[in-house]
Image 1: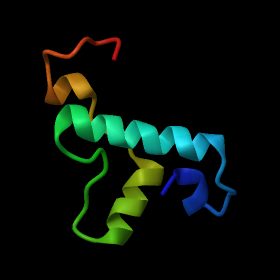
Image 2: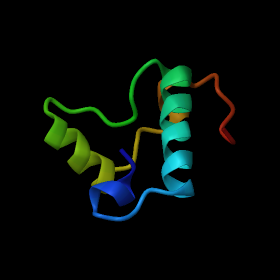
Image 3: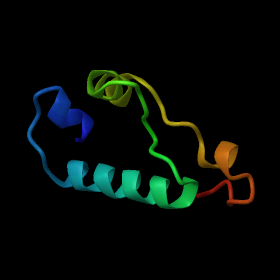
Length: 65
């Protein structure tokens, strides 16, 4: 779920781009960008935290990615 949907906004192009980014992050790193022990914790982190940089998890990836 995209952050704007969590905060009550309408889904749109931004939601699609966010979803694509989550899938690419998972493909490149082997884990989700936002993790938590409950669904509520994941949603909270999704709207308030930044995901760990790709290069922190996979240093061989180009920094520009």
